[in-house]
Image 1 (cartoon, each protein chain N blue to C red):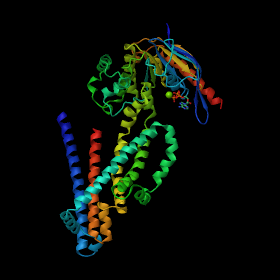
Image 2: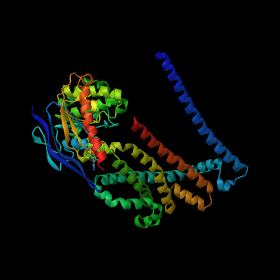
Image 3: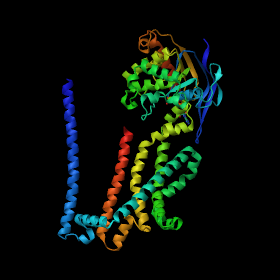
Image 4: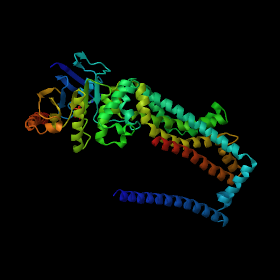
Length: 261
Length: 264
Ligand SMILES: Nc1ncnc2c1ncn2[C@@H]1O[C@H](COP(=O)(O)OP(=O)(O)OP(=O)(O)O)[C@@H](O)[C@H]1O
Ligand SMILES: [Mg+2]
């Protein structure tokens, strides 16, 4: 399959008054089209940095980032970004929230886009909440609204930065399924950052395991679990094996850093 | 089942209404007690009504002042100046706060001066203001503006700056430009802070007006207070203070109504 997103020896430094923080070191990996890929790694290793670079919010210090064989531009409309918290604007209704991106890009009069927004709301059971305010919705619903806000802009690649970590466990499993379903049925390529190994295994076609900061790719794992949804995939016989392998990879990394001061 | 639930709700609402009634009852009772005791002490000459006045004397003075026809002029003069100072300070303060939010460099340059201005008792500038803009209405308005504007700038700037960085990042990830970030995120996000600044400024602008009128004026409630104290007509002073209370509360009420509408 063709490479869809490609990192080529990407290095990134944050500049602060005190020091230069080496966040990424010669990162190389790729994600294929329609794949659901996950980034897992120790906390603070540089996962969010990878997404910010991909979204064009930061510029790589060295190396290249290609999407569909073209370099990422500053305001690249091929990319949608979903954050850890839903960041819905409380003073706007649900409808006004999901059309925020259209408004910013002067497409809020485009009947095709508006029809898409309506269709997405209907499809994912939020249409009756169209005129409600965000605080009237549950955590899971808010996260779905945030996803639709991103999808309305029709990005080819979706970046998800721990979008479920603010939810309680029950809701989390359900929202995982929902989001997975939405992303697969809308035929998107996705890159997910998560702390949760089970979550990564149950959702991903590819898992990219990172080292401590400065992050590089430690190993990559392609999965092919049986099941139509993340919840079903958790039942797969290989689930435990993969879990152990990733867990070992992450924990040996932590040990090394404990040794070296 | 549903009926039961609504009954419980009914009970709850009843209790709420009762609570509210009790609070209002005590408010009125407290005021009545205060006025009653004041009147009693004055009537029995425990306190000297010449210095402490009394509710009945204030009422009489009020009627007399209205009868001579001047009181409306005094009220209107003060109210007009206060509202003018209030509006100018809010509008100008908001514009300056936006400019400081927009340009990091400008903010860094002006920050120490803002802090100095904030700690300076603006009243000290009073005599100078009269030299600069002349006595009368403009001096009073300038005084009001000076007192209100610094706090407006500082509070609003803080509200703008404390806007969630991730929300700004979200806007940027959807390709928002700086204007859009300002109008669609930063300003609406600061609305609660704006309302509280309005409330603070209601009080502050009255301070400015009364101060300005003490310094130089030919009419207004501040003038009346000054006149009354110099002529030793302390009933007039107390009556003016009473009217100030009334006017400031009225303005506060308007702001509260605005706040309620915003919360809907
Ligand atoms: N704006 C910034 N300025 C300076 N340093 C930063 C900045 N953002 C992140 N860093 C540093 O860069 C490193 C990588 O940060 P990043 O947020 O990408 O990590 P992460 O893997 O997403 O962490 P987490 O698991 O906590 O979400 C961290 O050590 C962090 O302290
Ligand atoms: Mg992160």
